[in-house]
Image 1 (cartoon, rainbow, N blue to C red):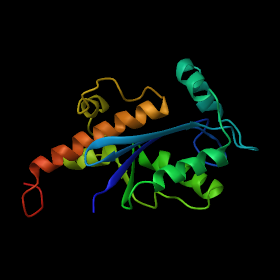
Image 2: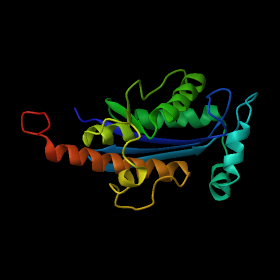
Image 3: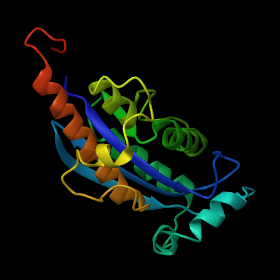
Length: 193
């Protein structure tokens, strides 16, 4: 059965889900190496959550991205229910992917369980930087410069715009390029040469 990869990217007002709010969620779905769908929502702030001062200071340097992620925010319960239904329209074997997956997935998981009562992405997650490091047999997580990783994507400069859907698509394109590279080196019986 084919895997569906869901490249996720989020924007937040702090580092901790629940204490801080997820401002924007973008997801790009890839099946058999091609982009097959996208989902994006800007979300209202969580009641009782706080904005992290360091994060808000960082946002001051990103005024265009801030404006985009604060346009037409929706109720988190409605936004996450819509997202769950969209994800569940894809076949099983759903794999979340992100850069870094630990940060993005923590928020997405918390929001799904808080507002939907389940996480349709399950527990599978692929960290793009880790995958690229492994593919290149590099022993350190931060050992390959970000610029080198970005060059794997034909759309130069596409990553790190801090617009969640744009970054989700850019990361998904990177993942598809990395998976294609892995396939080139795979032997017929499996394994890497």
